Length: 234
Length: 127
Image 1 (cartoon, rainbow over the protein chains, first blue to last red):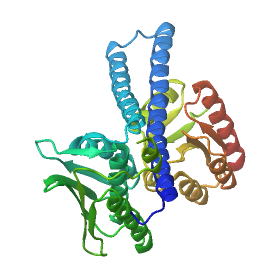
Image 2: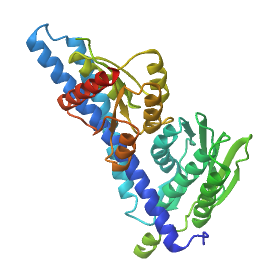
Image 3: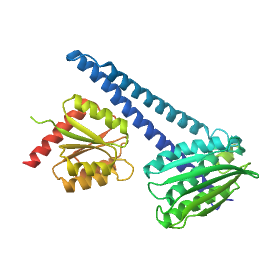
């Protein structure tokens, strides 16, 4: 149905799962490293106060505030990781396009940062209901982000706009060319297209060098099942 | 004895701040930057005994930075720092001349011991 065999769809899904788990756990490891240093810094300040000059309350307050920010950041990564793990629980469920977009923007932000790019997104004020596998929808959108990031120039901005469309939802990605090599962009774009078509949607793209890049994915409100493992559970 | 001059390089700005503060408390002259590009610019204008360098950074990666640093200042020592255990990166870094490879989080006393050992090698090299 999507130009990919069942085995290939399974492998691509597994590859996506691994990429997100690695990325989130890497960020969590960074938070833990920062917390280690900040709590160590508090110990250093307390130790120094016992040796000579009195403890500076403002400095302690500053470090405690920084610890609080990292705890919030770490909690957000744990929530994302947990929610992502649960996205394979139900192969067919009610979805809200905007909420899933927010999740994928969250996962993709680090990949954009690695390319020194910024991600901006907008969604309508009202919900866009969909039905299907949350894992598949995240996977499809992630591959669209991946292709759009690959086509975009380092240091530029990638914007994603979600709109309701007749019978589904439209996700429009726009950025500035040129990014990776033509072959690299073509391969990523081809995979995104195969997956979009696999869930029953369409992908239009313009990624010519020297012109603004544009990817428009239309996804139907009722998504076809993509993941082989999910199909078996259904 | 002059203070050890340490440059901390990591894309996690808060980690850089915290490490710099902790090294300063321990009597080192430490400062930090958040990109490989900034690190290369900094070592052109300032002299450091040791650079503590994150391997995985956006833009110019740690391994390229080591290569460039060693070209500019062969005696300056580089300690690689990473959140992952990557034996391959460790070996590549060592082949490029890195002094040591450490996994985050690092015990601060262990880090100081390794920084002093690296600084000692740098001093021997200068002689």
